[in-house]
Amino acid sequence: MRPWLLLFWLLGLAAALAASWFLAQQPPVDDPTLRTFLPLVPVVLWALVPVLFSRFFLKRAGPSETPALRELRRQVDAFLADRGLKGARGRYSVPFFLVVGPAGGGKTSLLEGSEMRLGMPKTIGPASWWVGPDAVFVEAQVSEGAGELFRLLRAVRPKLPVNGVLVVVSPADLVLADQLEQRMTAETIAAWFRQADEMLDQALPAYVLLSRTDLVPGFQEIFERIEPADRAQPWGFALSHDARQAKTVEALHAEIDAGFGDIVETMRRRHIELLSREADAIRCGHIHGFTAQIAAIQRIVMPAIDAMLPAGNGVWRGVLLRGIFMTSARQEMLSIDALLPELSRRFAMPRSGMLPPDLGVDDELNHGYFISGAVKKAILPEAGLVLKERQGASHPVLRWLPLAAALLVCAAGGYVLFTTFDHEIGLRRQVQEAVGNAAPLTSPARRGDVPDMLAALERLAAVDAMLAAEKPVPAYAFWLDKRDMLRNGIAGAKQAVRVNALVPEVIAWLEADLVDDGNDTAALNDLITLAEKAGDPASPQLKAWLEKRAPAIAGKGHARFVEEALAAVTEAGGLAVDPAYVEAARRRIAYRESLT
Image 1 (cartoon, rainbow, N blue to C red):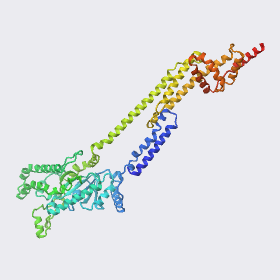
Image 2 (image 1 turned 30 degrees about the horizontal axis):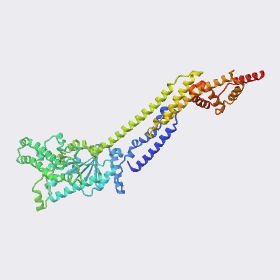
Image 3 (image 1 turned 45 degrees about the vertical axis):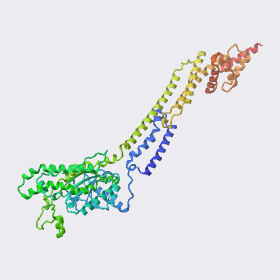
Image 4 (image 1 turned 120 degrees about the vertical axis):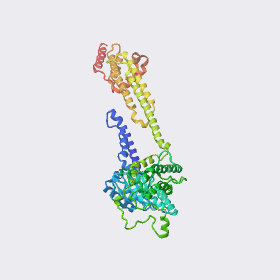
């Protein structure tokens, strides 16, 4: 993820968390289910933004482009779009292979004979681009100035520049070169791969294709009669691969020796069969010496192969050598002759030999031997190997450590959330039991119901005190906090008991005292004054009357009764005494005064 996008996403995450907190504190809906899940919506939606827009968030930041590189990239994009690979999706829909090798090694002929339905190539920058429906091949020479090509590949496909490298080496050119030229070729290949490893920053699966093997004496005599289906088979060997453990140079040498040994052994098994078909002595001699020539090819190409292997000092990891295959795109009339190097030095003759000008060669007789089989059956199926190498580049412990840490965090978070949820459910259960286990109260209430009222209020007060003593719910589980709802429920239950049961009972007692014959005139006057001021819960006369009546009504719980009665009168907004009782008390007082 690019730094500025990561910063933008983190700022958005903070805003989403703030929105979630606001929705949790002030929910805009009354539905309890929606109020529970509504605070999660901003965070969930913002977390999905990198997934929905992964093209922008997960784009690999490439190196800065120069105007020349930008122009080359545009040319490549236009050429690929013209061949049906439009946009980033099109560029990543097919694998990209680099086809490299010394000049004159037969790279172009090999691609023409690959049967990959490649169109006409186009030279863009330092390479020729071959585009087909199944793959894109970038043909270039192995040279020291390959940085421009690597930068262009990084610009075209930043996430995965190439899927593999096809190294085309001609044994004929190596056998005709002296030791100095062979060493220079190996050093050039090593420098090229080191630069590719540094600039492309990825594993490089490499396939060595030995071209122009038709120049080996005996090739024509052995393979000219094989069927087209046999020519389409790969001729060579693949190396084993283990992503968990890198191979040593000695192990690679042992596999290469075994691979060439299998090829030679296979040819020896057919030796008698091939000789039995020939009557010409020269052709029989070529067939007889072909096996020895194939065995000698290993010694000839090993310096170039060793240049791609790890140096052994830990400075360079080397390429991922996957196989060595022999191919022939065009069949030359002349074969490799051991006398040609000496003759070229003495008589200024070309090393590869010359055909007489009057000896015509029919190009239609040329066939691609073992090219399509190597490309289609051995190389293309492994186009995704570079992705596995990238995934397995880290140590197994380091690779699994983030997953283990994530699982541990998820497990710990799940355990904490579960315990928090279970604790909150337990609190709700206690409140429900406290409310549900209260003794039922009759309506209208009787004097004998007062202990039940006080017990219910006492139980509710104990639960309320227990909720107040509980630790607050952690911030990460704010949606589980239902304590305000429980407190409101307890307060509502207290108010219901006080207003609906206790207040009517207090009014009934006051009205009974107003019409009680046992009260003298002074007591009746006090009760009338109390009844007239009953709308004021803070009236001193009300508290005094309640304290006087409490022992007879509540017994030992008279203090609690006075406290609850005053709270009930306060919540009810006063006592609504029937005026008929007040008028009856006044008449009684007037009657007594008339008698005196």
